[in-house]
Length: 281
Picture (tube, helix red, strand yellow):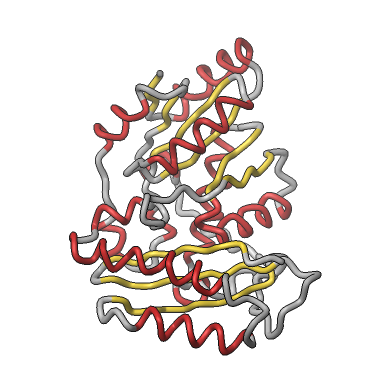
């Protein structure tokens, strides 16, 4: 496993690896690695001759500077985890290496960024598109792997790739959960033990709502789920939406011809968590 910090080093190594190994799979991360990330790496190594992982906490996608400062960072621990995986190279650049000049690009996602995360984190998805497109330009992968936990982000990245006519195939991978159902996230490490107990209620709420699909009106289900979450005073709910997967707009009634998904965001203490679940019939 090669650890690379500069683009100049990266270019010659990637050319060599692709010549020897064939297609290049890419897993972009912000570090604080867990089994969810490792599942993406396994998917890449199964489908590609070469797998690259980036570790880069991207400053342009944080609309809250405190959130950026508190985001867990431990490069040494992450590299130790990756050393036992099927990873050929790790790109761990500085912000100056990724952005030698300020990135002023503004993306038009045709409304995909207007709901949910986009409403609560203005500018977040533009920052995501900036860094992902920049990493695609630097690494030039054939396939890139993203977890479905960030479902809206996955839709945004697919839209960005379409807008830019990118040849990279965007691969969505299933959510990996803890035994109690909590979706794996780097932010879980920031929860206190009591907050961690409360966090399990998030996936419980999603599953509980799924069992009531088509039995009560959409808005009634939405309100019932919010009430269930608020039974725990540690949980502050930002949103619970049931959306059309094609454009991420909230649905108002049950339609067997529409793929729908329940999406949720909460704050527990100082930690913000998101999750989602397929609600299609």
